[in-house]
Amino acid sequence: MIILLKGKLVRLREYRQSDVELAYKYMNDPEVLLNLGNGIPYPMILEKEQEWFDSQIKSKDTYSFAIESLEDGIYIGGCGINWYDWKNGTAEIGIFIGNQQFREKGYGTDAMKVLIDFIFNQTNINRIQLSTYSFNERAYKTYLKCGFKEEGRLRQRIFRNGKYHDEILMGLLREEYNKFF
Image 1 (cartoon, rainbow, N blue to C red):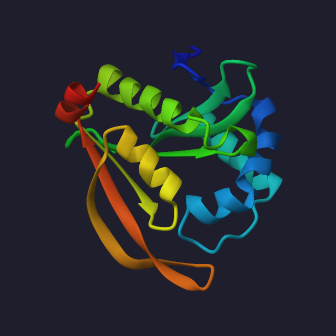
Image 2 (image 1 turned 30 degrees about the vertical axis):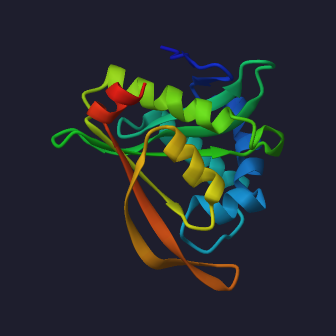
């Protein structure tokens, strides 16, 4: 079954084999490398991206979506539920916009809103959480626009570009979503 979730600027769709090479390129974009994880920002190899894609086909534990521009159908990034706890109604999500020409134009915010809407209207999740880093101001502002609240900070949690930075923990409850949207 192909799931199409549509916003004002993007659609969230299934990943396709044809996305793997672009995903590999996006994951090696310096901004994505520095912002996406807390490990050493080391380049991804194509075989690892293919392994990730293959694992998504078999996985029942994650929900990953390709983000596609509505205007021209270009694959621009990805988002999804990285893990969930059905018993306690919690999910952790993530997003990246890999195509530089689509950054700072509202595509990430639109994709987040579509993903949040999917979670709260199609699952029994009560709480969505995520984290970002204090140097990633664009992501932080996007999450606030989508209704997330800062819940805490892990001080000097990540070392990037010669300095230590905080990891910011954020959350959004179903009741807040219902008031916000």
